[in-house]
Length: 294
Length: 290
Image (tube, rainbow over all chains, first blue to last red; front, side, top):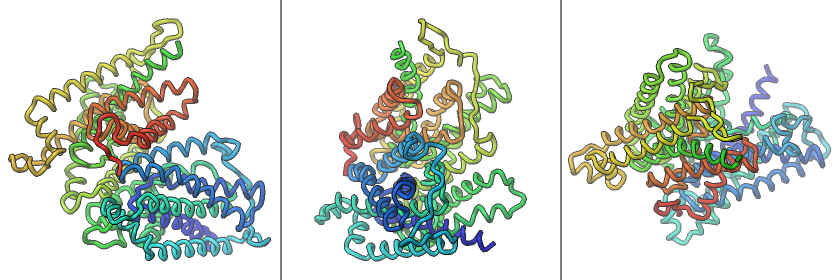
């Protein structure tokens, strides 16, 4: 039981990192990305590659994963600069699809559909983090650092600029804000921090394949942010905890067909999204009155 | 000969994409609702047709009619029970999009539970390809797809241009307030738009079921096509969406000369990406760049 809870908390903190970073562009910058799972994947594959071939050190594999994701995120930033929210959804959806194709086709780097096995555990100064409890602490520390960083960032002028762009891009532009640079930076920050989650995931499980980085993951992350409350600090974490508890909750309900748990979980959060949008668009944590995020 | 074969396949796929894209573009243009569940409408129509025609062995005309009815009901239901309540308190793009996405997820998984997550195919007497020239296989479905698309667009064009309701629908995208002044109800018109847009995907759903089979997850592909075609064609331009659908179907097939079939969605994305970067207004649309 203890092992189960430790595993659940570890996976929750990894997913919470993804939800918090997605919320950073969705809730604060108004960039609705359906390609967040791609940067999760980029982080995971890069960390796995570095850990297998060079060094499994936390201070080498993780920064490389972050840098690679940051560079690749510029591909996402380009269309985000050209078009407004609605159309960007299409571009990111396309990028998600393209990314999955590349993950499953580039066999020498990603191992294709079979994935990569035998990823060594992460080392912090020659100390190998194998003990699940220690790894849980490591993921929680990463989550706290990222949440703290984003909380600080959203209080700075940069964060206020982001919200200004979200609420009215034209007005922000008219006030002399450099919309292009602010948007690009927000995408780069969000994607590179998502790579941290990917790297944690890869060294934790020791095995990754393309299944973890599909559109379903991106949609699930979006659901976590929305159900918790986009544009709030605690909302995405709250949403992550709820959505990750769902499958175990459903497996306690003996009357549900156990082979369909995955589908039932998806139906549950699909329905939650619809009902929330009708009755409480701010999400569970967000304000119940008029939604702040546009 | 391979090239000619791919061009013919491209025309068939393109005609179906055009139907799908015009349906989405019609809804998005007139109501400004980002109808992400349009892909779900497609899957519903296709699976209703499959379960009637292939499983229950009902006559194809009746199966097609029921599939059409199911699609229209689903579209109008979403408009009345999901979008209308949201629009009553606030109608931001994001809220409508999320609600629509949620509906899409529900439908996809329900279909997965009912029919299984695997691949099913619908065999019709017309699915069989005929060898016209040595090495050139053409199925009668290609011709039917193209004729269906052309007919549907001719009817739609006449409806929008000549009839009273059609004119009201066009003005809905321009100025909903003025419609109210004329004593028409924008809500009612919106339901008509949803019925029309949903009806347009039905022939595409049936023909793709008959030519390439179905699976519950295909709604994502349909959405990618609809969105890409709407942007490439220019938002608000039905003619643009139709041409863009044709272009996407064509490029997907011509690309098979150089790339494996698993890259077909990537090709769609590259076309979309190029348009967003170099011509965000699309073929005929107004500028959408910030």
